[in-house]
Length: 393
Image: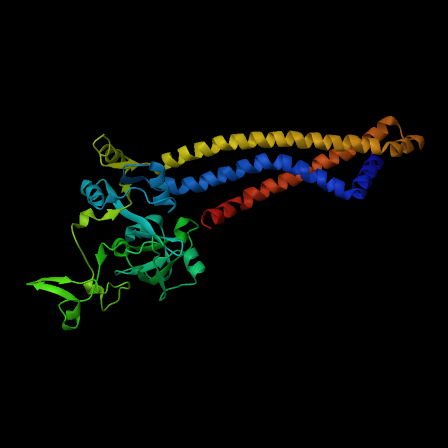
C-alpha cells in the first residue's frame, strides 16, 4: 500500500499547478455555502445585539425600519420628526426612562447625535480621555471619529451644511471637543455626541447674536420700541459658542415643540413596557412605538430569503465545478494512457493501477476538504472582528 501512496504523491507533487487548482476549486465548493452561513449568522448576531439592548423606540408615524436604522445605527435618511413633547409624555407616565435622540446633522461624514447624558449610561459608553459635555457647544467623539479626524480633548469639529446649495441655511457650528469615548466596537464609535440643545443650535432654533442694546450695535438697529428692538440683516450670528457669548444664546417658542428624531424608552420592567406600548395603540395616535428587535428580525428574514437564492446559485456553480474536475480527471487518464500501460507492463495489476489513480483523487478531495475546514474555522474565529470592522468602518 505504501508504494501505491508513494506513486500517487509523486504524481501530484510533479503536477503541482494542476493539483493546486483542483484542491482550491474543491475547497471553495465546500467552503462558500458553509462560510456564507457562518458570516450571515454572525452578521445577524451583531445587528440584533444592538436592537435587543434597545427595548422600544418612539417616533413620528412612518417607516419603522427607517426609524430603527436612524436611531440605532445612525444610518438612512432622517425619519419624520416628532416633538420633544413625546419625552415629557413618556416621563409623566413613570413607566420608562425617556432618552431623546436627534440624529440629523453630520461633521465630515460622521453623524452628530443630539441626546442627553443618559444615553452614554444606557449604552455603557465610558470616557477614555477628557470628560463628558457639560455646557452648550461641547461634544465628545467616538473612538473611530477621534482616530479618523486626529482630534482629541481641546480640539474642535465643525458641523457640515445639510446641502452645498443651502445658501439660506444655518451657519456651521464649531464645537469644542471635551472628551473621547473608549472603543465600544459599535456604531457609537463612529458618532459625535452633543447635548440636545447643541443640536438645536446647529439647526438654528436656538441661536445667539450680538447684544443689540449695546452702544456699538447701534448701526444694526432698525427700530426701537421700548424693550423691542428690530435689527437689520447685518447682525452677526455666532457660529462658535464661547464663555463670552454663551449667555446670548436663547430659544424662541415652546420647548416641547422643538424637534427630535426619536425617543429611546427604557421601561422599568416588562409590565411597564407592555402598558407603555398600549398607550400608543390606536388610529388617532400621532406617534408610533417600535420594538427594534422585531423590525430587525423582519429585515433579516429578507436577507435570509436572499441567502437561499445565493446558496442555490452556489450549488449550481458547485455542480459545474465538480463536473469540470471530473472532466479534468478523465482527460488526465486519457493523456496518461502510455503511463498506465507502462505500469501494467512492469507487473502492476489492474487493481494496483486503479488504486494509484483513486489515491490521487482521494488525496485531492481530502486536501480540498481540509483547506475548506481551515477556512471555515478561520471565519468562525475572525469573522466577528471582520464584521465589526465592516459595520463600523
